[in-house]
Image 1 (cartoon, rainbow, N blue to C red):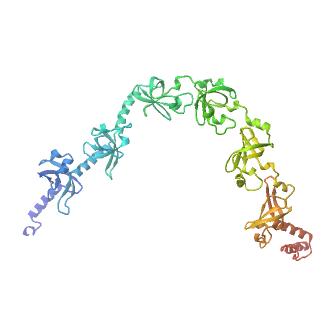
Image 2 (tube, rainbow, N blue to C red; image 1 turned 60 degrees about the vertical axis):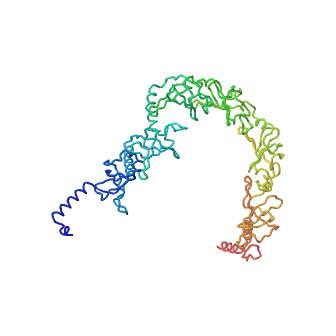
Image 3 (cartoon, rainbow, N blue to C red; image 1 turned 30 degrees about the vertical axis):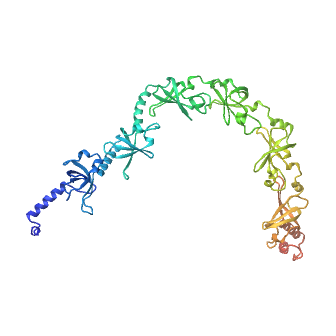
Length: 576
């Protein structure tokens, strides 16, 4: 230990200087990629010398072969490695050539992504949702979604596997170390350049001869021009007549002449028209008059009506609601067929919207007018229940193809409407009264209860404050249910209207069957509303007694406990 006794000796200082010089040349840090020189090769391992390390790390020879370093496995060759640990638990240095290659490859992918440059790669295998692509330069593996393989659907991609081609990096996840690439973007870019040159050949107004129908969608038809480019004829540019879908007019493979009407050099789209190759038939609309009758030809039948033509190219819609006076839910194909010539009246001409509306039923006699002439409002007619819903019956009236509307409220004056409605079923015969006819709206309203006497007529000669004798039917917490004598209607006297004194306003005082008097507190003949009150009767009788008697009375001989107090009050006022 004598050599280290004096640390400031010239020998110690010289050794320290040499050591610091050596360490400054080789900065050894874990997680760094450094160059190592192969010093020894065995059957399974390769020994690497890295300046600054206390020992030589070893690498599995298969790892080098796997990453394509087979030719570099020679003594004296330099290879990059990732220094994972300077010293593990066994005191050995841990390095990895595979991880170094992946990190370097990721740096190159990042640079290409930032500079928006394409990379070379090969599709190696298929996987769920796409394919795996190997970066040609670094061997890094990337994912290419199935939608990014090509710009058109491919049933088989076997011809693309193993072929070196360009890919665009569309997404990098630096945290997870994942890369997503696209072949479609490269293909589309190349096609875009070629398509731009082709579009330069066209100009608005050109006539394209013999374009071939290639396909169609809900918004138009696609045509192929000279096997070079696809152009679109929008649905509105196919015909001056209404077209719901191109397959109504075109078949795949047909040839048609087109007129170029628009060119979008940014989107690389060419818009064409077929209808503009012929004159606009709507220019002849002045030959037709609203309200006049014409023959029209049925061109197409839908669920909601028929498309008809007044003349070739001049199309109009006959809506299902204008086919019949009496049938509400008309099925057009049961009335007409394509090619029929039918009489119609023009009901609307809109030049701005280029729309013509027609009606077939206007050429027929209105059955509602005939019905009204024969059965005016107030007359009676026999009918049969044809259908019903939760609030009304529909009654077929006489020999007419007309259904009358019979609301549940018009079935009976008494009882609950919903319960009355349940008493009737389809096929039941009824005698009803005509209540209302709206021929323009094609509606007839009828009633059943109107054929009998209205129980409410009992109140026609009554007025507010009149006293009526009623019989108690039942009582509950809400009040008393009563029926006036010689009347079929029942009314509720609320608990608050049973007596002036709250102690007497008990519905339980009544067991049913009692005859009592009550006053009419509310009466509205038009609204058929009546309210009865025993309390009001007491008030009226008290007022009458106070008016008649001015001498001091106890009021105990009167049936009303509050009367004596009212008489005392009146006496004081008289003395004043």
